[in-house]
Image 1 (cartoon, one colour):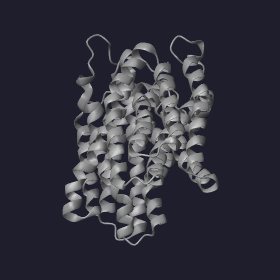
Image 2 (cartoon, rainbow, N blue to C red):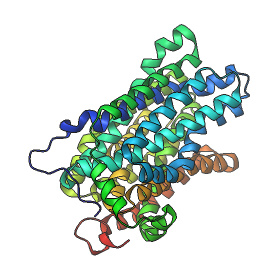
Image 3 (cartoon, rainbow, N blue to C red):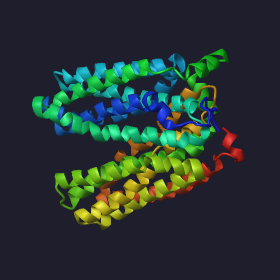
Image 4 (cartoon, rainbow, N blue to C red):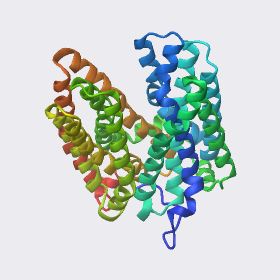
Amino acid sequence: MGTPPTGTEAGFRLRSIAVPAYGPTVVAAVGAGATLPVVALTALDLGASPSVAALAAGAALVAELFFAVPAGAMVHRIGERRALLAAGAVDAVASLAALLAPNVAVLFVAVFATGFTSSMFLVARQAYLIDAVPYSMRARAMSTLGGVNRIGLFVGPFVGAPVISAWGAQAAFGVAVVSGLAASLLVWRAPDITAHHEEAERAQAQTSTRRVLWAHRRTYATLGLGILVIGAARSARVVLVPLWAAHVGLSASATAVIFGVTGGIEMLLFYPAGSVMDRFGRFWVAVPCAVLLGVGALLLPLTHTAYTVLGASLLAAVGNGLGSGIVMTLGADTAPSVGRSQFLGGWRFMSVIGGSGAPLLISAVTARVGLAAACVGIGGLTLLGTGWLGYWVARFEPGRGDAGAR
């Protein structure tokens, strides 16, 4: 079920690798969180129309889809540590360009470039944790990685708020400049624990990224389609909840409170989710995660007040929180020893393509038959996809014959 970790189980504690493993991720996420609320506002200030401003706000997500596979190839070619140093530098330079952007075109290119950073950090950190953590604690390590990323995104707007208050919305990109440089500094000072694996891999026959992806096409076409369902359901929730809240007449502040409460619930669940995966298996997190996300979407059209919208959102948030790290854990479980980073880049692509496609589907269904139908459609598709997901997660669990079949 993947590469044997370098770390040994006896006496191992996650806190022993907290700074090198999670420090760069949470620092980079603070910068991303500070800028997320202001990309569209900055575009409007630079003269963009609302539609163009929305496109600029989504540029980073599109870039994650574009950069997922190249990120895996780059980590494989230059190594995890140097890839992370490059990602932090790109993030700082791109954020500086956004900070000083004189027009919308420069802002769009800068925001697009930050998508490279996100893909690189997640792929490289997965590779690091596979080596650093014993298999018996892998899920907890991966769910913690997802959790600290969410913590950084949650804290970021609060860090950016006083900067925005003093110098305007565009100044929030200054926080991202500092966070990118700080993340690179943490990587530079940390030990290069993946060097041994990378040296051993280079000593073996090298293969192209295309060949690695083709060799593991069965994994992508089975378990990979299952994690696509999770990515789509997560992305849909972020779109559907604010749209439905506005549909039933809730204020922007009420919607913000709903997001704040649900975000807090998600952050509380990431470590318990990893513990369940390590103790009882990946199935017992993957399936409840997808089911609760699907049911939450199905219940939204039945809500008409702030409290009922919050209730449906909390149900989905519990599912999303339980799923912290599930996609990365399954990717780590199925990653080969040779071409590991290249495989993880393809795995990241499968997750992101689901997240990118859901908003497009919601837009198309809403335009044709209404928002309620979009909620029901997404919820129904998620529940249907849960059957596929559950079947293949069970087949790829340790001890099953299919686990080694790629």
